[in-house]
Length: 360
Ligand code: F6R
Image (cartoon, rainbow, N blue to C red):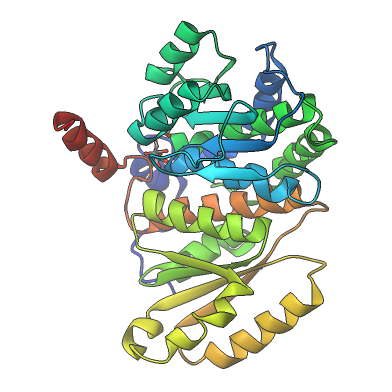
C-alpha cells in the first residue's frame, strides 16, 4: 500500500510536479532511438578501422553508462576488448590502435576532458559524442569525428542519443554486425511499452506506476545478472538516485552470491526498509535461475519486499532497452509519488560549480 499523498493517476497533479517534463521526454524515447540511429549514420569521417586493438568509452554518470550499454550487448561478438573509463585516467593500453569514444552530453565534464587530453597525446583514434561545450570545440580544433546530439536534455534522459551512435559506428567499422537492425526493432517494441507505461495508463494496468507506488518509503536494491541485466540494474540505481532523489544500490548474479548474500544477516531494521527488485529474463541461464531462486529463499525474511521484473525482448539489446525503459518510468513515477520534480539535479550542479571555482 502506497504511503504517498500523490495520486499517480491524477494526470494534472503529476504535470504540475513534473514541471520540467521528464515524463514527456521518456514517452518520446522510442523516437529518440530512431533519431540516434540517424545520427549514427551521419557522415562524420570515422577513424581508420584497420588494426584496432581495443575500443574505449570515456564518460561519467548519465553519459558514462554508455560504455557499459555498448559493451554488454556486443560482448559475445566483438573480438577486441571494450573498456569503459569512468574517471580521470586512461589505462596504459590505450594507444594509437585504440578506438576511443569520448561521451559527455554537456561536453564540459572535467574527468572526460582529462582523458581526452591523454587520448590525444597518445594519438588514439578519437570520436566525440556531445551536444556542445569544450568537447565540441576540441573536436572542431582537432578535426575529430563528432556525433552532435540535440541540446536541451538532461544527460541521463539522452542515453539513446549518446550510446546508439557508438554501436552504429562499431557496426560501420566492421567490429559488430546486425546491431542497427536490432535497435530499430527495439524502438518499435518500446513504442508499445510507452503506451503501457504512459501517464494516461491507470495504475492498475501500469506496472511502472504500481512498482513506484510500492517503493514509497523503501530503499531500492536492484539485482541484475552478468551482462545486460547488470547494466540495467546499474541504470535503475542511478535513475532512482537522480530522478527520485533516493539512495539505491545494485549488484548482480552470480557475483553477489559470493558476498552480499551474507551481508543481509545484520542491521535487520535497515533490511526491512529495503525493497529488492530482481531483474530477470526469459530464457534465463539455468544456473543463474537456480541461484536467483535459492538466494530469494535465503534472504526473503531479511528484506521488506521482493519484486521480480522480467525483461521482454529477443536479444541482448532489446532486453537491455526494455529493462532500462521500465526502470526509467518507475524512477520518474517514484519521484512524482514523493512530490519531487524528477529533472533537476541541483547537488550535481552545485558540486561542479564548486569544483570549477577551485581548479587547483
Ligand atoms: C545528469 C546526469 C549526470 C551527468 C554527469 C556527466 O542528468 O545524468 O550523471 O551525465 O554529471 O555530465 P555530462 O553527461 O554532461 O558529461
